[in-house]
Amino acid sequence: MSALTYKEQSAAELRLHVIADRVDFQHFRPLATLRLEQPQFQVQASIIGTSHLIHIAYDNTHHVSEILACADIPPTLQPAFSDWIANLVRPVDLQLTPAMHYHFEARRTDSQRGQPPFQALARRIVRTSAATTLPSSLGLTYAFPATPRGAAPQTLVWVMLDSARQRVTIKTAHSYPNEDTIIFSDSCVTRGCPTTE
Picture: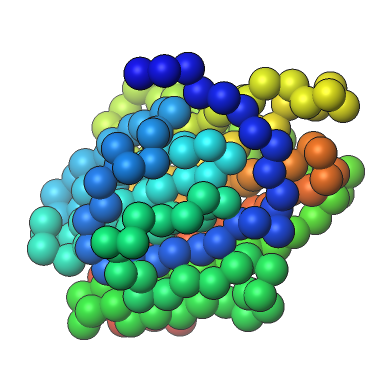
């Protein structure tokens, strides 16, 4: 594979695509990938540039893929939902199938206000990577080349699989030092319909 060339991108280019199916990860040239499997649920997460792709399967029958990316998705993929992050002023709630409910929220902040939650998520990923018990979560980090301004863009992805509650929780952070911006996202995929807590 040829070396990846880094290109500065804007948080305004980020778009959420939700696909109620499997996605071929190789279409997106993943930079880091991990899998997590438990009875009934399987999760695969990848960092793809300053973006991410997460696929969740329930009973290997019901599928949902979340793509948060600046790049276009292949035309063969038919999203159940697709919109620019900047347009998402309210949470996204989708009942994809009777067995799969999807919830997504995102927020944008500057690096000064975003640094404490960004570092907290990075520490959570370190703890996840160091865990020696049966894994119920996974964490990915990727730092890109430093920009002319000196700061390196970073992507953080953390996923927790809770079999007892029949749900998968996803937390991500994408930093854009060229714009002094961090985008945080929180997703939840639940078996059946969501319950209020």
